[in-house]
Length: 420
Image 1 (cartoon, rainbow, N blue to C red):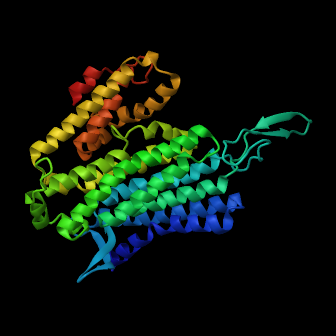
Image 2 (cartoon, helix red, strand yellow; image 1 turned 120 degrees about the horizontal axis):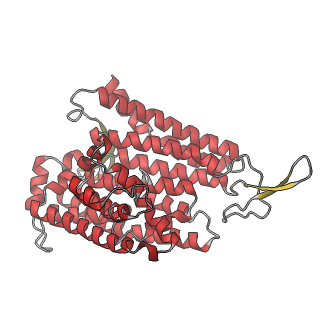
Image 3 (cartoon, one colour; image 1 turned 30 degrees about the vertical axis):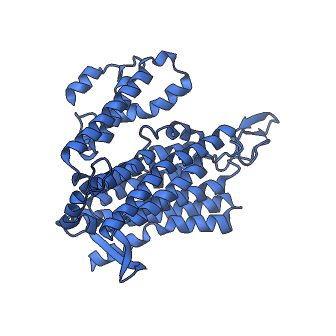
C-alpha cells in the first residue's frame, strides 16, 4: 500500500509549481503578496512531497531493485504504445532531495531580494532594475530607500514554471519527458536571464543563453530519435536492460567507426555540454548574472547546470556500453582541455577586469570546498561525478587556488594535485 501511494505521489510533485504559474499569470498578477504566497505555497507542497518520497526511498530495503516506478500508455505507435511515467530510484531520490531544498529556498529568498514591502520607485519602469524610491520621514527629511521590483508577480510565475521543468526532468522514467523538462528549463532560462528586457545587456544575455543551449539540444534530440529508431523505446529501465545494451554496442553506424551506443552517447553528451556550460558551449553562463540574483542562484546552483550532470549520470549505463578506450580518451581529453584553457585565462588574473574576476569567481570557493578530499562531502562528490565533470571543476578551481587574495590562498595547487 505504501509503495503504491508513494508512486502515485511522485506523479503529483511537479504539478504545484505549474499550477502556481497558471494562477499567477491569469489571476493574481496584480497582487504582489498573493502572487508570492501562491508560488511559495506551491514550492512548499512539492517540497513536502519530495521529502516524503525521499524518506520512503531511504527506509525501503533493496530500493535499487524495487524503485518507485509507474507508466501509462501515451501515444500509439502501430501495435505498441509510447509510454511515459515516473521513476524514483537511488539516483533520482538523491537529486530530488537537493533540488527540492534548493527550489524552496530560492522561492523564499526571492521575496526579500525583490524588496517586497518597499514602496514603488519614483522612476522605475517594467523591464528595468528598480532604482529606489524617495520617502519622507516624520521630521520632513527625505531619504532614498530600496524600491520593489516592478514585475514582481511576473518573476514568481517564471520561476514556478522553471521549478516544474526541473521536477519533471528528475522524476521522468524516459528520455522523452526528460527532454520536455529539459526544454522548459531552457525556455525559462531565456525568460529569467533576460528578465529586465529593457536593459540591452540582459536582453542580449537571454538570447545568447537560449541560442547556445539550443545547439546542444538539437544534438540531444537527434540522439533521442536515433535511440528510439534502434530500440523502439525511450524508457530507461528498458534501454538499460542487458539485451538492448548489447544490441546497441554491436550495431555499427558507419560514422567514425562508432557503434550505435557510441554515436548515441556522443549526441546525448553534446546536449549536456550545452546545459552544464562546458566548452565550447560555456559562453552563456557568465552572462546569466545579468538576471536578478535569484536567477543566478537558480541556474548556477543545483538546478539548471546540474541538470546536465544528472543527465550524464542517468545515461551512464549507455555510456558504459561504449568501449572503455573511447570513454577514457574522451573524458581525459576534455578534462585536460578545460584545465589548460581556464588556467591560461586565470593565470594572468591581474590583467583581467574586475567584472571578469567576479564572473570567474563563480567557480572558485564552492568548488574548492566541495572537492576537498579531507571531508566527507569531498569524497562523495569525487566518487559520484563522472570524470569529465570532475576534471572540469578541477580546471576551474586549480588556477584560483594560486591567488594570494583568495580565502584559500594558503593552499597550493601542488597540494591539491597530491590529493588527486
